[in-house]
Image (cartoon, rainbow, N blue to C red; front, side, top):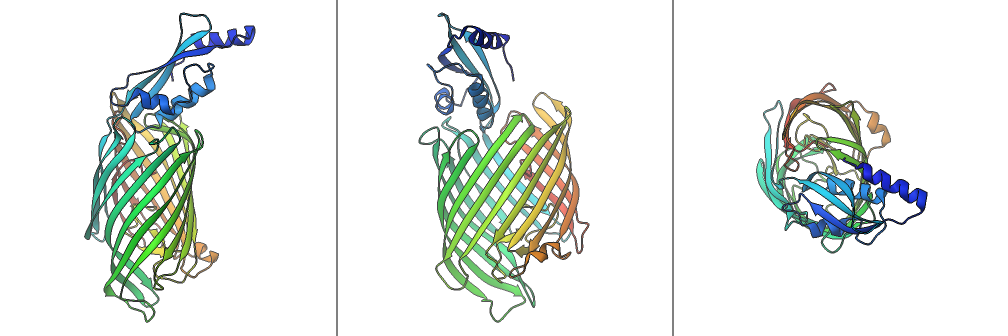
Length: 420
């Protein structure tokens, strides 16, 4: 981040002479698509306010988190009148119309993919809008809209629709059954940002679940086909203290997600579910970045084959396969070292060495299940990242995970964006 010697001099003057330094104007430059009015709306620094270096630093960190911004810095210049100054925020923009893709395989020839297209800076207001198509034996699609600053610098709205159809394994005492599963959902969330580091989402999701038996084991208490409407109340609380420098990230982030699901039928019980992701990033030297994610989660411990926490390639364990197990509790640690191999102009090539490990509580089980070797999985692996520094989230990743625990598989996981 660029700082001017002038700014330091000004603050020494303020300390020595007790002079109150005022901001005459906040100017935004370098932006092409992003509206200057939007940057001024979310900025803490305002024209007429007292010059405050801490507030300016917070604004720059906040602006660098925006999807439309690749990098940002500030400058301070003296205005015509003594004691008054102009603050300039200079922005290097991202290209924000971005395709998304996730592809994964395992050694049993399983293949699935999800592709999409999203605009992350709609109307120059950092509104995200787009959708996806998924092929995972069956076809699925969804549409997403997220406007975190729609009403003010603190209040926004999000709407999500999806029609998701997959083949889901259901784990019974007599064996494993395959069900065709469809979830059609409508979700509305209110978004509120308390301050620079704390925000909350609160909303409701109305959805329909349709299970159709295809093949495999059966049980006397497990229906072959059922269709049920549900109502889900959601609360998300996030603490973020991350700093971005192009491909490098440092700091800490915590995301807590709580849900209460009400069923309109007796086929599936109502349940509570909650989990917390703890993410830590640390710069190592000039080219290294260590990243870790710890997920702790619990749900109502019903003895049901439709438990909410899944073991899955794209969720938690790279190389493990598509929903190979389920549980009512989860402990997962993903840790990796990212090293920049090549960085020139707009292109970055980054290597990745990781270990994904986790364990699950069986439906109706106890906390001792977390230590059961049948529930514990460890997958080390390696990967590559191909990055464009001027396109938001333009990170094409390839990871290969190899299981070293009991009954393990191995496989590739492809995607857009870092795994976490």
